Image (cartoon, rainbow, N blue to C red; front, side, top):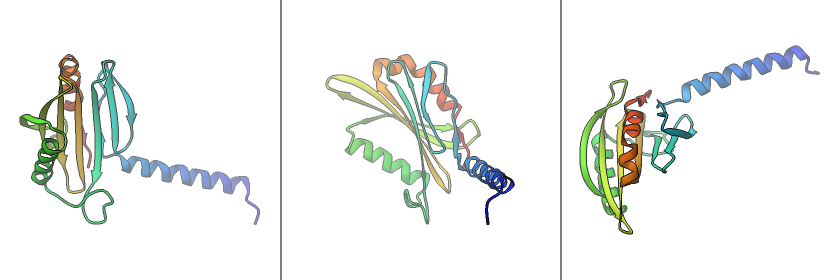
Length: 166
C-alpha cells in the first residue's frame, strides 16, 4: 500500500501530539535564571546557569525507587546524611551551615553550605536537596568565595524560584 499525503500528515500530527505529551510529562522542576546569569543548559532533569565570573547553579534530578535506573529509594534524611558524608570524606569540604528551605511551590528541603580551600583560595559550595517519592532534586551552587559573595543575591533568587514539579 502506497502512503498517501493524508496518511503521512496524519502520522506526523500523531507523532507531534505524542511528542508534546511526553515532553510535557518529562519536566520535573522549574527554575528562573536571574538576569546576572545565563542558562547554559536547561532540560527536563538538568539545568546549568552561570555568572560571567564562573559562579554556577546546577540542577540534577535523579529518579529513585523500584525500577529506577538512577538510585534506590531513600528518605530525605538518608540523602541528606549521605551528602554530608560524601562532601566531607571525598571532597574535603567543611559543613559551615545547614538550614531548612522551601521551594517556591512549598516543598520542604534542606540547604547545606560548605567551604573549602583549594590551593590557598577559599571556595563556597551550597547543596539544596528536595526529595519526593519519585525523585531526588539536587541543586548545587558554587564558586570562588569572593565571586560567590558577589553573585549570592542572584544565586538566592534562582534557588527561591525553584519549583519541585514531581
